[in-house]
Amino acid sequence: MLLLTACYLWLLGGTTPHSVPAIGGPFTLTQDNGQVVTDRNFRGRYLLIYFGYTSCPDICPTTLSAIADAIDILGTRAEQLQPLFITVDPIHDTPAVLRNYVRSFSPHVIGLTGSPAEIRAVEHEYRITAVDEIRPGGRSDTIDHTAVLFLVAPDGRYVAPFPATESGAELARHLASYMG
Image (tube, rainbow, N blue to C red):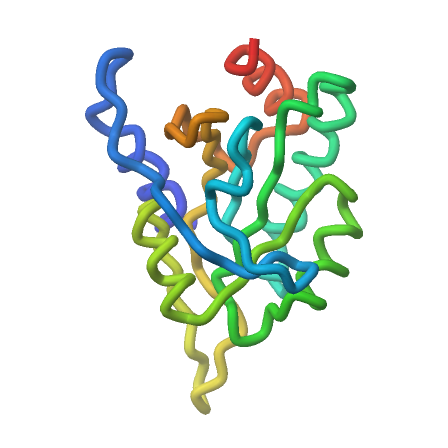
């Protein structure tokens, strides 16, 4: 959790209302329906991007529940928003696994995966840290990862980070303030 908090503070560090850090960028990934997409496929809507993995025991399901709640609270305003769940575990999180996982929270969330190199590239663009916690015997049970939601404007510009610990109501309030 220390890594998660430190990374969130780092994302916010040095920003003022007049300076926005260089976060985000182009990506090519595989959607949970098997279709290859790029960041440009989502232009025209706000993106709410979260990085995680389907076997995450705590923060990922809690965050996806908050996203689903925020969508419900926003009502028709949520039509301006496309939530994306990008896996940090592309070896295990196939498109089918992602689809079943994200749909269990909301039909509006799209899961994205890719090759390990594609995932590393998008993690780099968004300043995400994801580290396998190797247990005795070499088995990795969990992945310690940055827990931040990223809001991206309809034109592809990074707008703001939100802590993944926000409730659905808090997240809806913040999203509404940015989406107008």
